[in-house]
Amino acid sequence: MNTVEFAAILLIGFSLGASVLLLLALFTVYRAVEQNVVSRLGGIVLLVGLVSLQLLHADYLWHGGELFDSKIYAALLLLVAPAFYLFFRGALQPPDAARPAQLLYFSSILIIAVTPNALAIPLAFLLGTTYSVRLLLLVYRLRAQRKRFQLELFAFAAFGCVALSILVLGLAAPLVGVRAFVLSYATLIGIAFWLSIYALLRFPDLASLASDVVRTTYAASTLKNIDCADAVARLDGLMENDKVYTDENLSLSRLAQRLELSSHQLSELINTRFGVGFSRDVRERRVAAAKHMLIAEPDASVLSVGLSVGFTSQSNFYAAFREISGEVPGQFRKKQVAPEPD
Image 1 (tube, rainbow, N blue to C red):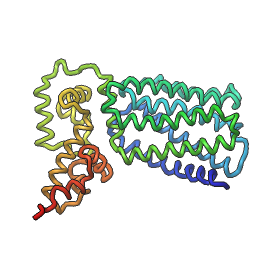
Image 2 (image 1 turned 45 degrees about the vertical axis):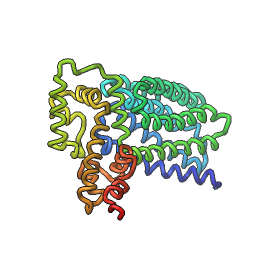
Image 3 (image 1 turned 45 degrees about the horizontal axis):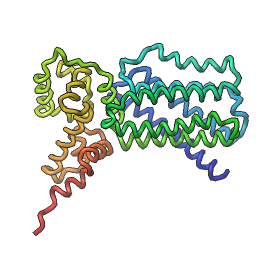
């Protein structure tokens, strides 16, 4: 086994472990993010499909065989393409844009019943190309929010490059040969999983940020019959007096219920009055509270401070603190509590 094959096997193994973490994240870390059922199902099918492909890649690299003759392999390719589209479409459109009829995208798997693999496999990648173009158009619709969409745009661009490479590779499969295709495809899938884990750890609020941007872009005004001044005053009361931002499970819908508003109304209210989305507003309030505690309680650990103001983990706290203040909590505390020079 040469270096390229060894690296591909390692990335296949990484993909298997990463898929478990991403499935857990889908139902834990991102459970409070507004995501429609179709998109969530697409994410599950996508992860299961990619893991299944990686297992078939590993079997081929170890034992050989006629991978492109496998109906299961062709079916997985035809399943992954719409799953990829439905999952990311759900992140780029409001939750209420989902329709049960969208599940018909998965009917593309029926192609294998009437088409030989020699045509079904290239067709799967052609479908993937179509879906990628449609996703790019959805990203383009968010251009008005590009100042707030920088992190999301970076993430989508990274995944877009991987997806484009996979599409080009798939269409060129007859030219490069099966083994070269498998090595390259397995490697690219592994890189995609690595990017996903990196994004989850480095930008833990990425999904919430994207949700805010999408909601702002598509929402029509919902505040026509609302006393905005009173709503803002009640919101400030909950934040400043009740400190509801310290609730790690605080979500837009839960806060809206307490204010007797709809989620769309509260989202628009925060965006129009504060110039930021709900997630950003909560993070700013948590970081402000954390700054006060870091100075007022010098003996408290940085982690305990982060957890007490509502962050769910150290990585989540550090990422938000660095994003808003430009430095990590420890550096901030050191500067603030350092003794004055003689």
